[in-house]
Amino acid sequence: MNLDGKSLKGNFIRYIIPSILAQWVYSLYSMVDGMFVAKGVNEIALTAVNLSYPFVAFLFALSLLFAVGASTIVSILLGENHHQRACEVFTQNIVLQVIFSLVIALLVMLNRESFARFLGAPNQQTADYVIQYITWIAPFSCVYLLSYSFEILLKTDGYPKKATLIVILGAVENCILDWFFVMVLHKGIQGAAFATSLSQATVIILYLHHFLSGKGVLSFKRFKPDFGILVRQVRNGFSSGVTEMSSGMVTFLFNQVILMYLTQDALVSYTIISYVNNIVVLSATGIAQGAQPLISYYYGQKSLDKCKSLFRYSLVAAGVVCTVSFAACFTLARGIVDIFIGPELQALRDSSVTAFRIFAASFLLVGFNIAVSGYFTSVERAAEALVISAGRGLVLMAGCLIVMTGIFGGAGIWWSPLVSETACLAVTGLLLLIYCRKDAFWNQKERFEVFRTPKSAVR
Image (cartoon, rainbow, N blue to C red):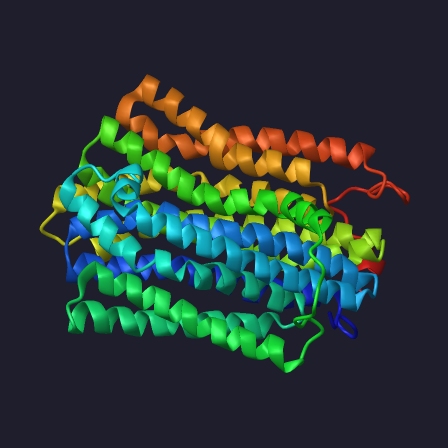
């Protein structure tokens, strides 16, 4: 990692902006599929894309689990000047993901009908659309896993801008292919899925060109399988994987609860909301991921002041992004909904706008929770990171859905995210307080508040 000659704040900005942009682009893959499917097929096909999203989220979550875990270890090794060992960890990570992806592809392709029902398809017509979609996603599981992993590790290698440019190129290709397959060739939902998979395959070629060319520090090296590294990698990356998977799990939970308390039309409303929610959550995740290799690098150097400063920057950046997101979504809710729902469905448009504005209130809190979880991951505090990620993404959300719908019925669905994030905020604050008081690394020097940055730390 080439961090010389730049201020700490400059390096932070240099890493998080490409990371946020990359996260936005990843969220646009499913959104673009949904937009073209809604216009080129029908609303039922749009619902099928939403029902299939947990599977895509699972692939990205598994990739993130391995990539962040590997990136944390690699960054620490680079900070300690163990370059050869860093390359061995990098290579082992890629090989493991290829193996896992082949197993996943085989299992899904052999059980497509039952898998579609598991994802929540309420009838045969919707199930058929889901099957058509995953038929062109599952065989490409390998490229989905590797594209996300390579993007993170390319940033770790010191090329955040290059990683973002490759991701953007893939997104542009996806838009063009979606339009061509869905609107020109009329291949329907299968065309949308194939367009996304093909664009992911293209970016893999570009990533491989970098790592095979020897331009950076990281490259493929012969390695001896190290189970200890695998355990450490999974432990470090598990919370990030849960954060990513939480979007898929939340989508799955919401789909089931909506079908219980509301109508199938409400699934269309939630599909739109989930697209925007993913952008906001991934923006906060992008900040955490952008700061992660920097914090881990300086953690490897035992540079406490710089770690504290980077943590503070992460909190401020996440707070600003999520506050602006809430204000924008509350103000522009109708315009966003109109992109997906035509004027002939006025009642659905109105109900979607109301639900969207209620849901958007949760954006105000999500950034802090994800930023703190990201910091814990960066300094190998896996247990704390996992508690926050699992809490906000799975446990608390499921509990709030049960309680809020039990009290308020279907209307409680849209308030559940705000209640869940508030409860998670209390847990996050408690864990952070305990860490600041008791952690040996944090207290190795004279103590000062996390929100106060020493001038020496920004050089």
